[in-house]
Amino acid sequence: MAWITLIFAGLLETFGVAMINQLSVKRNWQTVLLLILGFGSSLALLTYSLRFIPMGTGYAIWTGIGVVGGALIGMIFFGESKDWRRLIFIVLVLCSAIGLKLVA
Image (cartoon, rainbow, N blue to C red):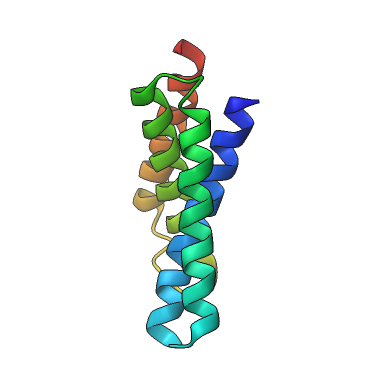
């Protein structure tokens, strides 16, 4: 259950990062509210999952999901570079997070 919570926390962090980008495009109270809800929920779920998962592993996976998610959202929705070298490094981050899960 803690691992599922940690994955949702990472996905909500990705949502919060997307809202930061959206805020730079459209400044309104709805975007600010979604940003606060995204990051607030993410931190709450991270806090819960760290009761059962070692802190170093949990935080690394949470940040890894946020990094990969943010990069993919940027490429899909905001026209960021899809260079093959960038994709290789994104895959390396993802593999590292999976590796931490396997050894934790």
